[in-house]
Length: 458
Image 1 (cartoon, helix red, strand yellow):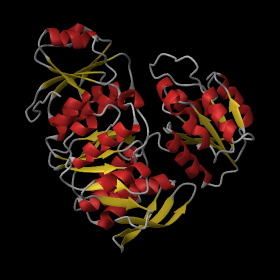
Image 2 (spheres, rainbow, N blue to C red):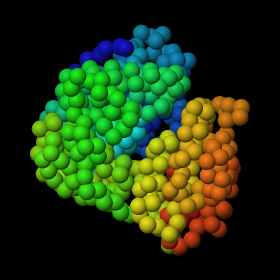
Image 3 (cartoon, rainbow, N blue to C red):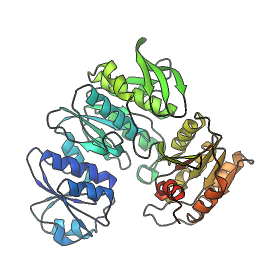
Image 4 (tube, helix red, strand yellow):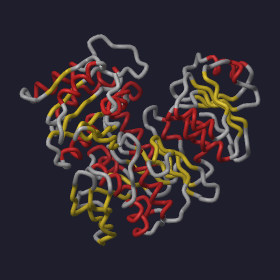
């Protein structure tokens, strides 16, 4: 790890500036007063946002984009042989990873890091909004865009707190030096890096143990619950009777959730959350617990959560056409899919039609059999082929593995396998009926499908 000091203005160049990982960092660096430039391989909403902040972003990588006076930070997608990385090293510029520069930002404030296999984007968003409502003026960098703000990052020069979504995918979240941590869950993912669930558990234990402040852990989750037992001191949340922040009286509906929160037996308040699903109830409770432990007033937090409008691509309502409602969700892991479909089922639609695009060949190879129970709450499943996300295909690794796992458990399941993305629109235009919910799920380009169907594209 390369340590740097960002307390004084610097010249900083970001390689892969438009991507989700670097875009929020770039915006924050600008707001901190640094002189930022960037490059990316294509135009994107992230590139447009940075340009609106005054950042010069070049399309295409070139040695000419880099100067010796700059700090050069690269996204995790940028390889060692990238020409800008090679140029920076040849002229003596400091080359930083995303983790290096994020850690340097964390050092400037009291950092609250939110981690977990899933749920961390929504939980980080809820926590940030709760702290804003409580008047604590937090800064934040989050992987998704908060619908109220339209941005996943803000730098407040006067506030002391900094909420960061801590990405566990490459183990670097242990470097952040967070004062307080939240762990939503711990499951098997990113085995290409960790190699085993034991190594994943160890990384989360290192992450949580290093925090000197509050440690907020979901006791309902098996993996996080085991972590809570290992820690000398932590604060737990969930429906479990032993939770420090206990959830009760949960009511789930199509568009919202209501529940009560008790802190060590004392009622904190009744929450009305304008997003559906038990998983969001858990995320909101994590935000309440963290904010209260950091000194925020419960009534301010609960009031903020009542106005929470969600995060882009987290059970996001995308419109209605001919009586069919379209919702899109980033769910791409087995338990994420199960949670999204549970939220859909609670909405009492005539039919829930799930459309799922597996993400990455490596992840499909690791987890295909874990999906066998994930689609139980769907009335009909349309399964398309794997979204590569830059990976090379692996022999024998296709969505058919997931299909066969489902049918082995549920031989009468209503499933349609359409490997070719192009055939989805034609099929769904014929299959969907008024009163249906069409729920698209995945981390790839399937997110474009609701708009394509509603606007009759293609």
